[in-house]
Image (cartoon, rainbow, N blue to C red; front, side, top):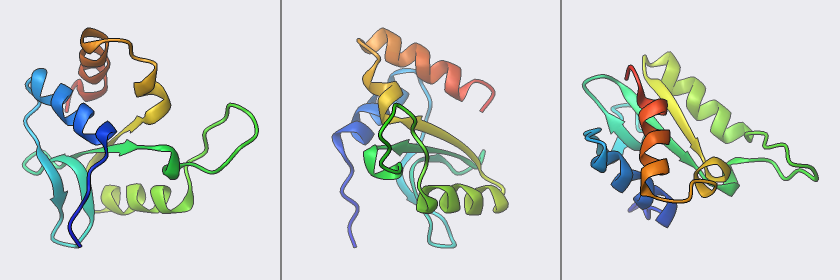
Length: 110
């Protein structure tokens, strides 16, 4: 099945490119796990988590669903560092400069 990246994923990928974080878009591991953006050499994964990655809650809590937690756990067991970009954090960033600063802080040391 051909991946269909969301606008959110494309926006994050574009901002990563602007800060010079080289990555493969929609990377698939040897084990068959799909990663939104990856640096295979450093085994760093960026997962862009839209609303479907969270349980429905009545308050402002955002709790990852089982599928999202399992994928992160599997990637970590395979030796990947996993960075999550939650939609509600990304949506609060008002311009390219704040998006880039946010990603710089998330990818620092990766």
